[in-house]
Amino acid sequence: MAKKQRDPKKVGLGRVIAWNSRAISQGIGLMVLGYLSIYCTDTLHMPAALVGTLLVVSKLLDGVTDVVAGFIVDRTDTKWGRGRPYEWCIIGMWLSIWLMFTCPPSFSLVAKSAWVLCMYALVNSVFYTFLQANNTVYMCRAFRYQEQYVSLSSTGAILSMICVAAFNIAIPSFVEEYGVSSSGWSLLMACIAIPMALIGIMRFLFIRETVDIDVKASDGAAEKVKLSDVKTVLTKNPYIWIVALILFVCNFVTNMGVNTYYFRYIVHDLGLLGLVSAVQILGIPVMIFVPAILKRISISKLILIGCILSVIGYGINFIAMDNVALLAAAAVLFGLGSVPISMLINLMIIECADFNEWKGKQRMEGTLSSVTSFATKIGSALGAGVLGILLSASGYIGDADLIPDSAIGMIRHLYSTIPAVLWLLVALSLLLYKLDKLMPGIREEIAKRREVQ
Image (cartoon, rainbow, N blue to C red; front, side, top):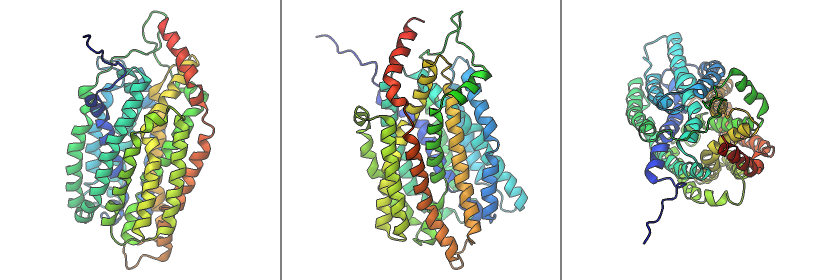
C-alpha cells in the first residue's frame, strides 16, 4: 500500500504554535501598556493631562522610525533571512516595559516624565516598530501558500486570543493587589516580562526562512529596495491606508485603558473586570469556522461584519452603567467583532504586497507593515493620551469620594459612544476596499510571472 503523501500546504500544530508564540507575547504586551495611564496617575501621582501629552509626544518619533524600520527590513539580507533577525526585538520590548513600570517614586515630576517618555519610546519607536516591520516579510519567506497563511492566522489567532483572554481575566486582580505601590508594580511586571520574553523568542528558534519571492535584477540577484520604492508604495497603494485605519481604531480603543477606570469608579469593583473579560472567550469557537466562512465571503466583508458587532456592543455599554450582565453581553459582541481583525489583518497586508507585485513594483512587505505599525502605535498612544486629556478636562480626581459627575460622564462616553463612532467610521471605509475581489486574478498572474523567472 502506497504511503500517503503529506500535503505541502498543511502546517503542523508545532509550527503553528512556534509561529504564533511572538504574537501571544506581543499581544499581552499591548494589554500591559493599557495599565500605564493608571500607574502614572494613581501610583506616580502624575497629572492625567501630562501623562496623555507624554504618550502623544512619544509618537512624534514613530513617523520617522516606522518608515526607516520598514526600509531597513526590506533591504536586509543575512544568513538568517530578511525578517527573522528582528525577532530579538521582543526581548528589548519586554525589558523596556518592565523598566517603564519601575520608575523610582522619589523622582521629581520632570524626572518621572523623562523616564516614562524614554521607556515608552523604546517600546514603541524602536522594538515594537521592528517587530511590526518584519512580521509579514518573515511570514512570506517562511511559508509558501495562501492556505498556510490562513491556517497560521486562524489557528494562531485562537491560541493568541485564548492566552490574551486568560491574561485579561487574571491581571485585574493582580493589579488590585500589587498595583498600589511602585515596588508592587515593578514586581508584577517582572513576573510577566520574563516568561513573555522567553515565549516571544520561540518563533526565531524554530521557524526558518526558506521561500525566495524577491524581485530579481537582470543578473538574477534580489533587486535592492530604493527610497523611491517607499514613496511609490505610500502614494500608489490606497488599500494599505484602509488597513492602517482598521488597526488605528482597534488599538486606540484597546489602549485607552478606560475599562480600569470604569470598573473602579462606576461598577465599584475592579475585580469584576476580569469576569467581564472572561466572557469574550465565547468568541473563540467562532474562529474555527473562519476558514470555511472565507470560502463564501471576502476578508473585508467579514471584518465589516465584525465592525458592526463592535458598534452594537459599545452602544450597549452606554446604557449598561453598573449592570454586569449587560456589560458582559456587550463584551461578547465587541469580542466577536475583534475576531476577524486579529485573524485576518496580516492577510490584508499580504494582499497589498501582491497588489504591488502585480503592478510591477517591489512587494515592500516591510514598508507596508511599517505603515500599519505606525497606525497601531499612533492609535495606542492617542488612545491613552486622549484618555488622560479628556479625564483631566472633565475634572477627574483619583479619589472615589471626590470624583465629580462630569468625570463619571466622560468615563462612560470613553467606554461606549466614542468607540462606537470610531468602529462605524471603519465600517464605512471598508466599503471602499475592492482589492479582495481582484485577488484571484492577481495571484494567478503573479504565479505565471514567477514560473518564468
